[in-house]
Image (cartoon, rainbow, N blue to C red):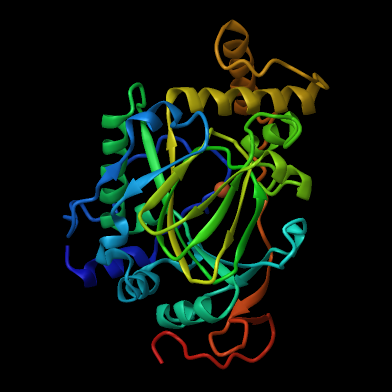
Length: 355
Ligand SMILES: [Fe+2]
């Protein structure tokens, strides 16, 4: 497909932002380019000793995405210019990792890809290019290839769906302590960052009720965090060419070191991870609707099936209406402002797309 065709086909796409909601197994997006042959061959390397750790405990391994032109400044600017802005989020933050409430959404509509990249290099925020695999056939193909190689190397790993978001973030930017509902892999491509990973499904780090809410999509993933949690964390300093994974739902946080960072965050779904989501979502429904607390979190067996059937039937008749939390924008990106963002309402001085 020609670039111009791809540009126009992406313009009108609408989809939900990536969230803690488990998406249904989607049909193929007709807007994604059918076959985009990658200009390089992605390689996933995983030491024999790490294979048993995948999805069970934190681990680090290697890849070669940092050698690809897909993540050069020019390619990122082209992607940003083509990407539907309603699905691109710019989020600033404070400096205290205990104050997640300082996370603020900045509008980016009308700011060129070049200016977005310039702003992220000089400012302190991150760009979340959500579901990049739906907007660009090359990313879809890349993620498929990465998971095919993971599945080929890890005994018993059989994802039935994957998706990804590209994260471009400023020097010293941070991601607050949080837990994601889906299982994920972080493919680090440019810059250096420090990642703290905390024990999964451990009530000292996140209560079960909070995780139920995250699976149900009724709250943001950010969690209350105390410095003392770090005593139980495993810490990595990621460099380009490394990837990391941990157990599904393990809380984690990230701080960039002194460079712009580019990472591909992928999420994958398996029969087991879908059962996790169903059981936690059903438990939340039964807790909120009927006051039933401390229900079993077992993901197999008659109890798990019964709860999920009850929840599904209740949702069908409208007893569990969907609620999704969203950030409210208070800033907008301005590449000419010292921090790369300004409060909404201030006159914009950066150049615009098409100017
Ligand atoms: Fe995360």
